[in-house]
Structures are given as C-alpha cells and as structure tokens.
Image (cartoon, rainbow, N blue to C red):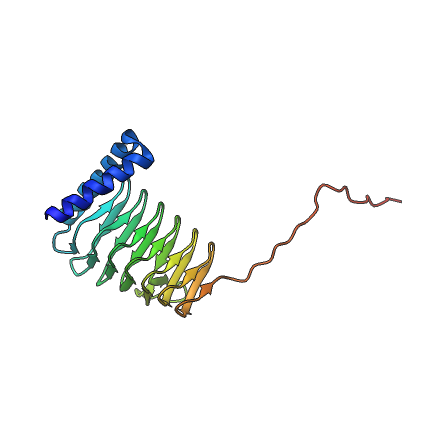
Length: 210
C-alpha cells in the first residue's frame, strides 16, 4: 500500500511539472468523476457487471437489457466521453486490462465480444457481433456471430468491425476501414482506397444549338 501511494505521489508531481498544477487538478477531478460513474454502473447492474477500477467518462453509458447478459471489465480500463455500450440476450462483453476506448465509440453485443488487454480504440469506432437479418421475415431478425480482438491492438478512427471477425495480437487497423473476417497478428489492415481528383472549376465547353 505504501509503495502504491509513493507511485501515485510521484506521478502527480511529474504531471504538475509538465501540465501545471491547475490543469493537473482538473484532469484528475475528471478521472475521479469517471471512476465514480464506473462504480455507479457496477452498482445498478450488480448481477451483470464484474469489474475492478475503471473509468467511464461523462455522457458515456452502459445499457444491459437481459439478466443473462454479462460484462467483464479489467483493471484500469478507460472509456472516454459519449461512448455507448449495449448488451442484450446472452451477450458477453469482455474488456481486458488497460484497454482505452476513445470518444463516440459504439459497442453492441448480443453474443460475444472480447477486447484484449492494452488495446487502444480511436474515436468513432463501431463494433457489432450481429447483423440484421433483412432477408428473413421470421422472428429471428438477427444474424449472430462474434468479435475477438487480440492484445495490444490499435484501431484507428471511424473503423467499423462486423460480426465473425478475429483480429490478432499487435495488429493495426487503419482509419476508416470496414473489417470482417480474420486479421493476422502483427499486420496492418486497411481497405483498398483510391485518391481521385475531379476538376470542377474549369468551365466545360457548351454545346451549340442549331
């Protein structure tokens, strides 16, 4: 305990030197509010959420719609502002230690989503383990799969991860990619894109009307 307190004090001193005392205080108040919000959601979903200390920043929310749904949150997970996490049916969402989820991310789980430790997720990322079954008129309106994201993965901004996707350890997903299928470990994944410029400033030749 004493060793941990010494580390905290040393970290605060270092932050004060680099950021300034005022901004360090503001930043840590924000972190404290996030931790309190995390405990609040753990309290209201006591039978569904298993967690250690984690931070859920302002306007982020967790919605669990089924008593059979489960969410496991590792140590020191940090979820920034305006993130939306929804779990339904027998969905199980597992977020590993020290995962960072940036602003405006959406995670929708009805079966299984796993995010490995030390993974970093940039803003506006959407992760779904299911699709809407628009071809079938029956009551089974969802096509259910799973998403497995390995450890130490970097996911760029505006990425969409679809059902039945496995991303290996240390992979990098380029910004704006749509991911479905297997991404091997230690690789960079990106969708093929073309840069094309169309000149709209040059006036076109007018057709003569006879």
